[in-house]
Structures are given as structure tokens and as C-alpha cells.
Length: 406
Image 1 (tube, helix red, strand yellow):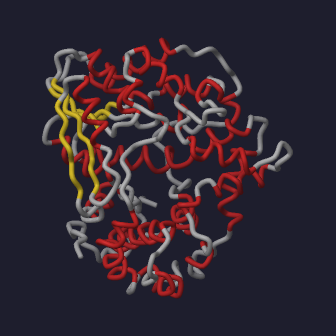
Image 2 (image 1 turned 60 degrees about the vertical axis):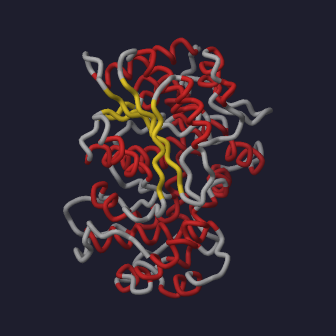
């Protein structure tokens, strides 16, 4: 997708707009195979703690930094990383950056309590129009993704420090997507085929596609659901337990081909050194050797059990309930305030439509619908990102310095 040849691969388009990742890319992290999960061993919280500390030290080097920024969402993962940043670097000044999106759930209060608990400075980054700097983010990442909060965080962090820490990877490695696990297990049977499990997995990611998904694409794309299932089937056609198959698919999905690549490219563009201890090779190895029950409590529908134990040991579990938090923009409100007008401006005269990749009738059918469902809103944001990427890197007609303002 991002090579020097200004062309578009059909599978890249179809998978990005259906799964929100492009499996044809070259990943930064190691890709996992199903048999990587078969060798189990006892992984204690002490082993995990030591691994996190070691990774933090390796990310920085020999000298203790004067200043470090951390992306603090108020969730379990980033809080654990902050805990060990304070343990490892006792003299560094740490600034916690917390994002507050306009007209979205305000998650800054818990982050403030956690920052105060560690006596670190918190800076709240308010984002009014989430889409405003989408072209700049696409320009530096060279990827057509709209989930770009990391661009805003890195831009803010660079003003304070050359280091940016985060809790990325905790959900995929240690069982954080509990709202999907329970649904997946309810959709399958003991004798479900690999195809049935792949289809159930798709149903658990319903915000990534729409009911009339096949109608989005033009003749040049040649969309088929079989192309999508062929990407997922290897993760479910093996002898792993169903939940471990989900862990395998989650890791080899958005984490491998979206989040890790996108975030790394953005961080590098600002000249920042990342500190991501939950995604070290050692932590990845620990996670795949743990039993599913060590990560996820099915009866209580609670995940990331090892990190919860670490927080409990440090008297921090009191800050958390069972709800998953993190940076999240309310895309319905974003659509109503900015997204609809911006998408209509660029997609009504879409180059992807003119060149046969997208279907104009689908856009016209849905773009002015009242009370548009969140799935369609998310899909339009995906189309907008791909349209900008296409005009920027394929047709060469889009100025990357453009700000998206209505």
C-alpha cells in the first residue's frame, strides 16, 4: 500500500474497509502462528513486572531521562506502565497526557486521580474536531486510517520530552476485549467449523463493517466475503481452544497491521523514542505461553488479570471498575458536528468512485440519512481516510497540509 509504485491493491482496499487493517503490509512486530500458543508455562506477576522494568530500561538506555511523557488514558494498561516508570526512573519528571474529545465520554477524571497518586503532572489535551489533522497524520503514516489520536498525543508530547510511553498491547496480549469474548463464545458451538468461527468473529467486530458491506465497492475492487474469510480462517482452523483462537486473530489483526505500524510511523515522524513495554518481544512471549484463564475470567467477564493483580498489590485497583476505558471519540457527535459535511465534500466527487474502486450509489444512498447508525458513520470515516490517502499518494492532487474544517 505504501510502496513507491502509485497503485492501489484491491485486497488492501477491501480488507482495510472491512477489517480496519491491511494484511498485505509488512508488520513491525513478529507475526504469531497458532502453534506459538501451544507451549504453556507458569508466568507469575513477578516475571511480568521484571519484564516491564527491563523493557523500559532498554527503551531509554543507560542514562535516566530528565523528562518523559506518557499517554495516560485512565485505563489499566497505561496505569501499570506509569507505575513502573516511577519505579525505574525515580528522578525523571513525568507528564501524563490525557485526551478529552469534544462531545464524548470524559475519561480525564480517573486519569487525574491516577496521575495525582503518582505525583505526576497531568495535561489534558482537548480535541474539538478529531478530523482536522487527518491529512497530516495520513501524510506521515502513509496509511489510510482515521483512528489517529496518536498523532495529537505525539504532537503534544514532543513539546515536553523526546520519550513517549504508552500501554499499547495490553488488550491484545492479556485479554482486554472482554465485550467481544463473551459474545464470541455465545455464538459458537463445540462442533463449530473454522468458517463458522471466523463468521462469529466478524460479528463481534460489527463496527468495522456495515450490513450492506458488499455494496460499498466498485467493479474494480471485485469484493467478496470469501476474500475476508480467507484472511481469518488460519486463526480458527487449528487445535487451539476457541478463546485462544480469538487471541491469535486479535494479535494478528489490528495490532499487527494497524495500531503498531500506524503509531510507530507517527512517533518516528516527531522524532520521539517510544516506550512500549507491553509490546516487547519478551512480553509477547510471556503472553502466548499463558493459559487463557490466567488472562480472562469468563464467569465475571473480566480481563487483563495479571495486570489487575499488579495493581492490587500496589493498592491501585481501587481506581478501576470492570469497564474498559481508553481514548474514544464519540463518532456520532463527530459526524453531526464535522464529519458529515467533510465527508460529503470529498466523497460526493470521489476519485475512488471515478476510478472504479467505490460505488457512488452507496455513498449517495447513505450520506444524507438522518440519524445515521454508528456503523455507517465509522464506514464513512474509513472512506474519507482512503479518499485522502488515494488523492495524496496515487493521484498526487491533495495537499498534505490541508486542515479538514467545515
